[in-house]
Length: 153
Image (cartoon, rainbow, N blue to C red; front, side):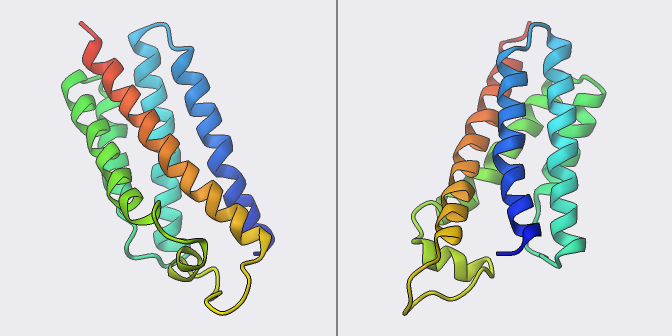
């Protein structure tokens, strides 16, 4: 892994820490819209970087993040519920594929290397754990955010 890989890996727990801290400390409905706006802008930008900066044509998160961004910008409750629910699904589908994978298989699929007949380096093992944890915490975050919008009157 190079320094850019380490930086991107660190963004996963940093962004999730910020997201969860913001959500758990939200007091007003406007806080929920602000959190949705911020996180969808960040993760939408990240998805666009993966597409245009790294050439990953399979990345589709920018669509759901754009809808979440626009619905929260307009503070439209029903549209925000639908869009954040779509974001949950956007994470759930790849999570169902990624979470059961071995570290070596996951590393090969995402282009981190082929470790079929050799030991997986510690850096790749850590990356795999962080990557999988990111999916789990993201599903939890967007699910709780969706639930909080549903609970608004």
